Image (spheres, rainbow, N blue to C red):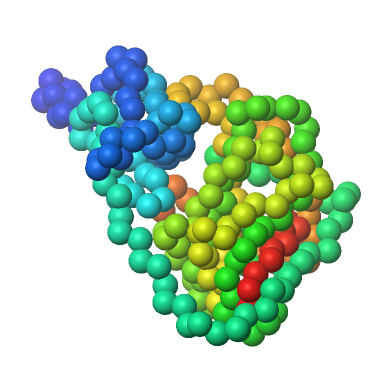
Length: 263
């Protein structure tokens, strides 16, 4: 009986003896940088060249990247090919729009530190009561130490009646090296992403990634913190195991993001 259980266990587990895999586009075979690797509910990322080192025994490996279909590995394959999605650009009526700002009043003595790898989010309200198009986003940060590899991942999600969609808006994800941002020059260009902000508002997620390419974690302290606004609201986190947004706090200072858009 014990022997039978052991055999079943072997068939349900992927056993890896230190192997490097590469994640590529299934069409043009180009490398897919910073892909998300979910291993038994834990989140890791490929490096800038799409490479990742696996070691040990795993029950479940899922590879994700915005703009591509998820892939579950039944066995180790190399390279791992992700199939791109067809991106539908929303219809935009040719109306005259005005450049406007949604700005947050910040408090320099109030900061937020996001645990590494955690996808952390909150709702951005739209004060203009009409749909707009995001052109740029400003993220106020403070560095605690220098990590040249650290990146910031920003995604947008639709939200309706306090229900947040589990998948980001197509083509809304952007990745930027944190060292390109500072207190004065922290504008992130979203012109080519064509992200709409409905009059009901939009949900934004922020994620700090400081280790890539391995299932071994060495860094335990984030290198940056975010300056908060005076505004408070609901904070959520994405449960990677259930793939569902969950409430983290009901009344917490929000990160002092500001944006420029055409409304």
